[in-house]
Amino acid sequence: MAILKIARMGHPVLLRRADPVPDPTAPEIRKLAMDMLETMEDAGGAGLAAPQVHVPLRMFVFRVSPSRVTGDPCDVPLGNAVVINPVVEPIEGDVRLRWEGCLSIPGLRAAVPRPWRIRYQGYDLEGNLRGDEVCGFHAGVVQHEYDHLDGILYPMRMTDFTQFGFSEELARAAEAAEAERREAGR
Ligand code: NI
Image (cartoon, rainbow, N blue to C red; front, top):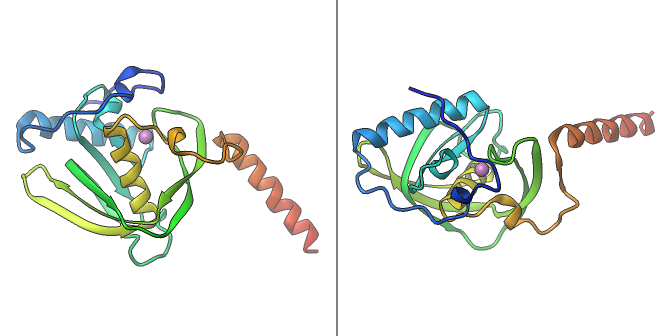
């Protein structure tokens, strides 16, 4: 296993449409998936798409930590998962703002509008087609990673640029607002 170099916003590999994986069961695809999982864990991310490690193929890895889910029953926690040649279908209706970060846009976070609920499917490393209907954080991560396969970064999905900033500043502002609320409540 190896930790791979992550492309940052501005690199052209992040803007092109990635190509289908010819054989999800190929040994080099398994090796790439394992390296991507190790890279995601090392960087502390919730997801990582192949174009982010300079490989323009339609696959991504992700995880849904039980500490990140929203409490909606369709927001299902999931251990390390590999999704190859995915299809993602938003379920019409509910679109909500969710805070997102990206390993290719380090240090920043933004509120991004996303369909709350989606259906998705893709191949695993054994060549089995797997799918699920999910919502919330799980659905947000899948949509974010899927976008990478089409050369889309989260700022391209944003509608309100006042909710975009450095994670450190946003955390500081949230803390200050919380302190003010506590003070006012006395
Ligand atoms: Ni990303």
